[in-house]
Amino acid sequence: MFISRQFSKITYSAFFTAKRNHQVAVVGATNEVGQTTALLLRTCPSVSKLVLHDTTDSTPGVVLDLSHIPSKSKTKGYCGRNTLEEALEGSSLVLAVGGLPQKSLTTSQSILSQNADFIKIVASAVTRIAPVPFFGIVTEPINTLVPMAAEVMRHQGCYEQNKLFGVTIIDALKAQTLYAKANGFVHNECHVPVICGHSKETMVPLLSQASPKTVLPEEKCHDLTNTLRDFTIYEKASSPLTPALSIAYSVYLFTQRILEAIDGQISQVNALVENNDFGTSYFSGLVEVNKNGIGEMRLYSNLFSYECGILEESIRQLREDVTVGKKILEIV
Image (cartoon, rainbow, N blue to C red):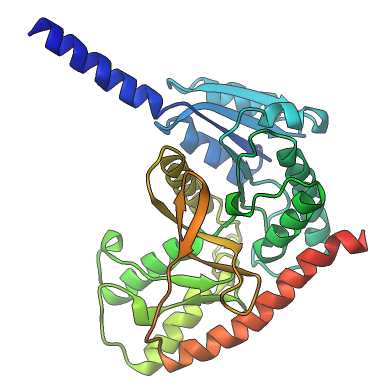
């Protein structure tokens, strides 16, 4: 009996230890999204080492503050551009969350320029890590920066397209909660697919595929769709803000699911990935992920007629956004 118990204890311990050996690096860790993401990941069971990197003077203080939260995981911080490659070494997943926020996701040249510089630096550093880690981009505008990152990595001769993601889970979370509120449903029991891109002009919530099913007047469907696509709701608040909390939570969910996939499970995430099936080289949707990276994307049929119209327009705009990203390296 004693031997049996000891064996069970050892087996149990070994199993869970094996699942908790992932290093996750958060780059741009001192902004609002970065700090909140780090806070959530500090106690994530799958993260054995959390690495924070930034170029700001506040980086050591953020790392110290985080270290005072009891956790079995280790925390380490790096400050300065010349320490980035060292910070990423050994990471299973790299999360790029830095750069300037876009409260309404309306691309301005100044924001695009600065955020593009940030992603170029991170993408270049990722290519010098072996094996190449999974790479999640949260920095906006995702429609443009993910294709740009792919080009950077391709030019470095180390591009693994199955490991590059634009993190768009926030779109599905927002659709889920607003759909539930509009219909009096329980939030956790709702699901609304969101596809195509990650901006007001390119994201397409599919009420035709939502669950639980409900019959809505066509006018209400149009109004709800417009609300779900509206990124300016944060600017209409009493105090304009960046949705740092919900974005960070979406990054936390993304991290959990990616680490599950690395551990051998079949997981699913909402992400903008390289995909040529929809008339553009990148597309956002629910994709399967396994230990080797991106698998199949979920397909939908029997869309409402107005959704088909929105999707066609959105794909056209997404194609333009992607083209900008691919050509940034030619401009600079």
